[in-house]
Image 1: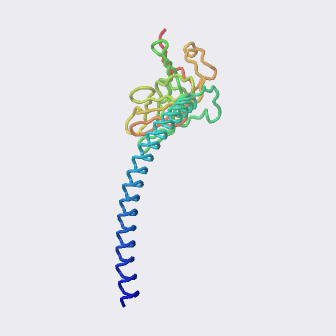
Image 2: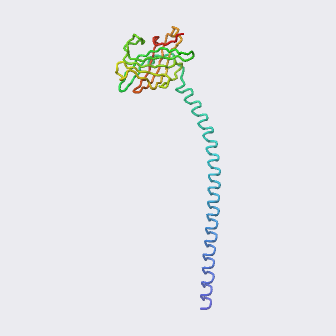
Length: 276
């Protein structure tokens, strides 16, 4: 037993293969050697958040692609550069409502008015009541100072007769006025309110429309459609052969509206001329 095959010879636990030799946890594969968390793959080494891919390095928001660099709203594509609303396509440039096609930029006023253009159909609504005004007349108001615009004075009514209003003409059941609109040169709408501009008054002489006899507008839009006008000719006693103004009106009052289309013919009895 002591020779060759002795437990202490060759295969002895203490020889060659003991746990402390080679394969022992302290040798080679020991957690502290090579693959240990402190070596190479350690969070502090190479791939650690502080190295390379760290938010502060390379791809960090402060480097290259930072909102302040290149694609930053302040650079190139910034709303203020090139494509900004202030450049080229800005509503104020070319296509803006104030240019050409705007409702505020009137076209030339036609002197032709045929068919439905010569109809007067204006509806006055007050409270729960309404009536149709189917006659329209106009006269001129001369300015007190030279150089100021002439004005139109228009009456819309629903009387039994189609004749110019005068001191002796029958009183219509209802009457609406358009006062202080300037003699138009194009189709530009004229607006007014209690603060100034054109205005309107509705009169109810038989009480079918409202409890009060008269009410003044809070707002009005007077839009010329076509006209043949010459205030100086009218004052000289030589008005045009065709003497009219066609228009759309939309007025508001405390308890109602007046709206529709009118075709007013000339009535000398409605003129107000200066003595000069």
